[in-house]
Length: 183
Image (tube, rainbow, N blue to C red; front, top):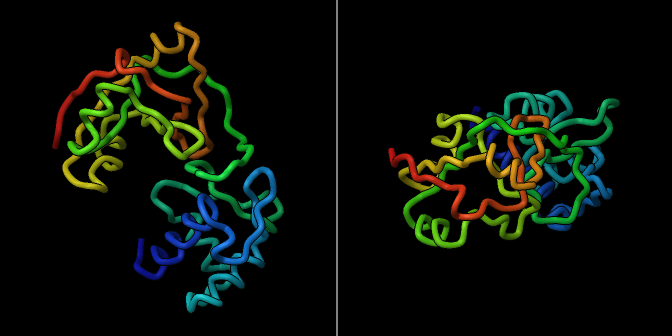
């Protein structure tokens, strides 16, 4: 993703997931903001953007974090909110194993307490090691944790799948975790 698109993507991520008020935006109960308001907010912050460029930001985001409404008049983040929103996550049966990338700094508390959603709506899990590796390496050397998703589901945990392929769950208790590696 080019630097031009990355700056806009970071602003969208912050506003649509955590702080819409910082851009003068209002989100509805499902996290949607008006596309015209997003364009105005970007312009006010010196990030001149037209609809065509905004569509590229959404389409070329490596994690597919955003989506437009069917009519294109609204945009939202797909997951990762610290705000209260009602997402359109699909309840789904998980694969046998899922993965989570982290760094050494967080490993001891995770192995002791499990994965918790902290200020977000859900814990985010990846369907493959490669994706977990990318996520974990954002903050340093990635450590990959394998999650026994099949056993969690058998024990009554509910899993949701976001439109961009991120698996979501309320928490992962320590006994479902196995440390695989660090890169």
